[in-house]
Length: 283
Image (tube, rainbow, N blue to C red; front, side, top):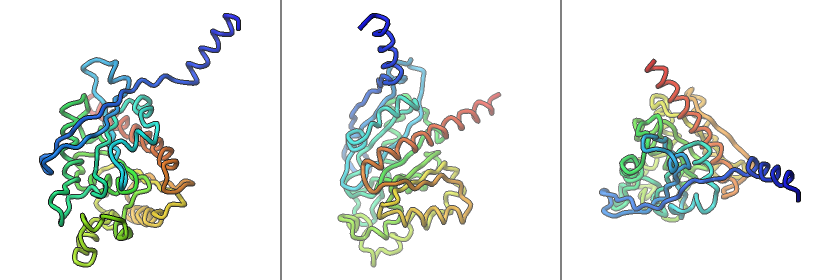
């Protein structure tokens, strides 16, 4: 191979195969609510690692599904590339195998909504260079994590400016056969009021005044698509602005790895829009 051809080959590889320089860390985040610590994966974009100590970054929280843990997103997707591409910090906390990210009314040891929605956020803002405002903070998740992300955002509208759900179990009433769910929600008959009050569709009106940029998607072959459609239709009926998509696919990592790319793009656009508004307000 001659020198000129080698030069152009190197240039082609550089432009078609970008160098990803994000940095992944595992941190232990304590929970005062549950009197123990849980590990979390934190992905820092290249700009964070190579930048100065003044630069601060928005944060996207990614919740795993039932039976999963804090390693799932990094192990099954190329999530780190999205940190570099959109200049965001990605945080993947551990939500327990069957916690449903709620503060359980029947198990006082399961306080995962407080942990993820309050304690993890406070830890990340204290230990990393974040933009610690609602407008620069988003939360999403898959399956059980999709429900958890919407539930946490609804209960903490001052903490999250954007929220999403991927293949979300948005109505737990349709998941009563899910192993372990009764241990945190309680018996469906005796605790029916709690089950009903936590269904996202029953809380759709709350999104009206929450000012949360909202994105929801589900695979057309997913068993949860009907409940996601019902939520979408209710949001449309109420006039709540949101992004909704159904794409080919089922309840699989193949679907989730594709869907998260659209969601992080949605969040990045929301962050940029808020940043532009803030700059305009100060001029």
